[in-house]
Length: 388
Image (cartoon, rainbow, N blue to C red):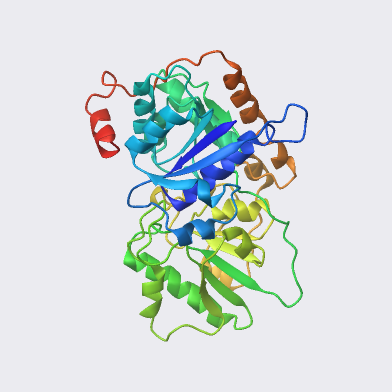
């Protein structure tokens, strides 16, 4: 089986590569029907194309570095035409997915690949816009039952086929369950490149984190950063915490550090994960690590923390300073695909079966995105022009 992953940022590369591995795990197994699986990585050239350092920080994704190369949109389409892939995973922003769907449709391949797409994390904004830009793929992965229900409602609500929506889970959940260690007390703040957006809000969060470190001098307090200044990720970071930290009055206490690296490795030594709305919260919850979602700047859609209403995780720095640790709501966790009960191992069974069924078809139907020159004549041309 030949698979290609097209990604436009570091986190989408991680999602796409691990999704490809999860979808093909059965084919590459030890059974009599097992067959070799070859996965190629293609990085779409653009403002957020990951650097070698960012790719290394993503960690092991099961794809040989020699099989990863940078391409333009046109080069990608030519590669699909020439290589005869069985499956293509589009790990792109919504507009990129839409453009590639139209480009692939225009190839008129005699036997086209199965097209898979989805989301790298919590879907808290632009739900309808992002979903309709992804419509037309054979499989649109939902990271939870909650997301699958919302996705189908959007497609059905505009009269579009919703059969592509397939419930799965985030492919990078994993790691050992939380186990406290004698003498270890580590708080990690999972920073986000664009949440919050303003200098005042980002400075406030940094100041409170530093004050927390001063209040608890025996506690290790880590600011987990996604990228270094000048690097871009899935979301563009206009105000890096590294630069804000240099200007903080009073400097930084000795028990406070800025750290990079693979989130899973950072979580290995975390006793409390704090964030505004990072997907790292779901990784932490999956491992039963105490997790807090901040309300200091309000519970608002632009912040994404409204997604955690009902989770039991919403709290403030004042309460955390006083020793409060939120307790997650089990029902909310179950609906979000956080399978701390062990059911994560079967999360991709339905998606794998759907891929196998599509591959067994003699011929797949033409790709048919919801957006066409007829349905969106004032929108689609601009999308295609930006991703030509």
